[in-house]
Length: 524
Image 1 (cartoon, rainbow, N blue to C red):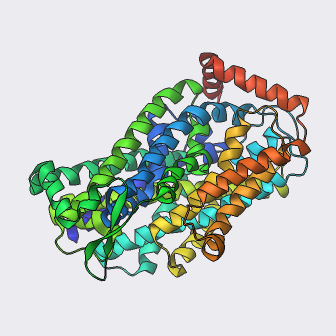
Image 2 (cartoon, one colour):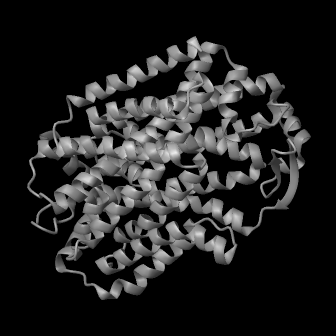
Image 3 (cartoon, helix red, strand yellow):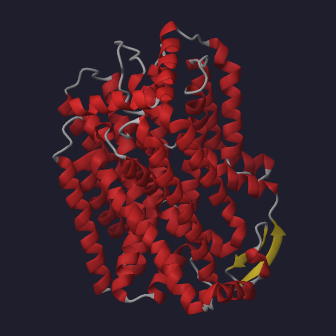
């Protein structure tokens, strides 16, 4: 425990130090929310990874593979495709559009700092419902998303230090809130770079140690096959029965499970904490390099996480009571206490790297899309900055309550929030940057249909349908349908059409657009 405590202590001190460094560079609301839009390719790419994969990558995915084998990898395939697609299709246009779109209230470039403010300006919404409903969805779903990270954090502290959930969550929340409040977006992004490196190295080191101990890949394959041949099948057919303490045969995966897994990829088009990296990158010119870095990291990290799940099956003679703890258990079983402390700190890094980003987006929405939009539009920038910092604390406390008194796994909480954001925002954002004739009525209908279905689907499915389909699928379909059905009730103004053409030209010019942004950053 001494080695682990020391490793955790060094890691936490480093995170706070980065927060203090960023504090001196965070002097306005724009700095706090988007870091002044000055992230380079490496920071934007790796920060997108760290803010995305969280405890799901190091706990949820290996645990799912441990329980059911290769059939659970369909989620990873869907995520890899969706992540690459969002960088290619959405990142360049969102970066330019959020800055250039005309302010719906006062005219001129809006420099929209949040997705709700962008949607209001993009569609010149006369009712302001788009901004209100979208900010409400962000706040509600982030309570559950942040809570998922805190559940993972509590499990980690319990395993390493024997702490009860309440003090474990209090310690984790305290550190995350401290550096997020201090440095805002810059602190979150630069700590993400460190955290992304730690996560990837941990996922590499453990398989190397384990496969060496098992006698190579052939030994690993034999060890897995000895538990059940179905574990190595991409269409499943095996599941861990914890009561029997062994893997048992099940039906092979049907289309519902495979489609549900692949549908996770749709979520990338609507996750505000990931899209913030696209909005905060320095220029369109930096996006191709950032995308290459980010997607390469994501695919390799998920492949290693899948490998970790299989290693757990082969390594442990007695099946684990808690499959989501397979990675920490492997770390403890295979490495020296000092190395174990560093590797376990990587799991904490995974949790923190997502929780901080989500806290920041939720607090920004409360401030920008709540206080500034509906209470005091002309609020002093320094006042807004401190309101945002207070909102970080408020959201963190609410999420801690859900984590302490809820009763869901990391995977369940992540899945619920991921579907809500993916269906509530994904179809709208994707069409908003590619469809010139889209209107505010279509956007609002799509948001309500997608977000509402994501919230209600599990209840309806259990009561009436019994399909077992992931909520993302029906929610995204209904969102697209609602957009097209109700779009004609609104109109496209001359300013909206002009904005669309101007953004499209800047994105296509690439170098011209990047130079313009770079020169503005230099002036700032």
